[in-house]
Length: 239
Image 1 (cartoon, one colour):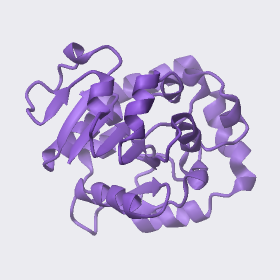
Image 2 (cartoon, one colour; image 1 turned 60 degrees about the horizontal axis):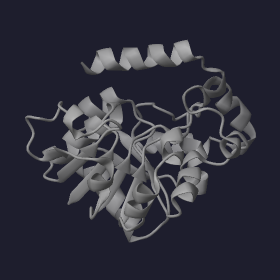
Image 3 (cartoon, rainbow, N blue to C red; image 1 turned 135 degrees about the horizontal axis):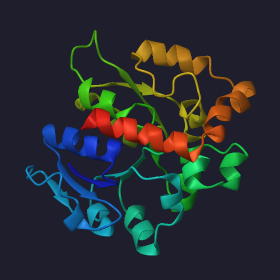
Image 4 (cartoon, rainbow, N blue to C red; image 1 turned 120 degrees about the horizontal axis):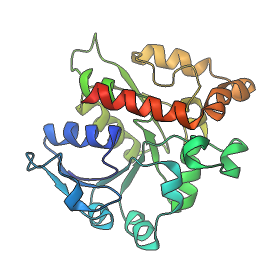
């Protein structure tokens, strides 16, 4: 398949390599331009492009950018995404990075907000695994595979997304509709935990609306210094 990725950071960059390794043709873009995406120079299956070109005419588009960036997409980007058969959102809302977004502060699911901004369905995937686990813990040994959640509309597109998750070495877990994807967001019991599929299903079932304020407390109180330190730590691990 032809897959376009917007965002070449921890998750987007790792996914580019994973998807290219299993035979897909990957286009990738960052916010600065293709000449600055040099980390894939040795991989002919990964082609840096401008953002709109990266998602024009692809089979699947993956958005791996801060939530605030989706809100600032220009019209030509939104128009290009409108014709992509499947769009995946890997993002999570962090007010310290994204600024306060009223709908999300009132409890709207992060990726439901993204879908509303784009005016089209999306699937929430790859948002609740840390990049080192995504990079290093994929396996086709069924006894050792980690689960990865997939939330979004039922149907053939969801099955295609779940097949993609399995293809790169993880066990897809159907996490329900996009409106239910608040159960996968920062602070919830399963967020960024290395769990197998059964553990994920148990954890999701135990994630209840009555505890949403508790789930969000850690996310909402994170300082800029803590957020920067977490990113620096991740960068060192992936180096």
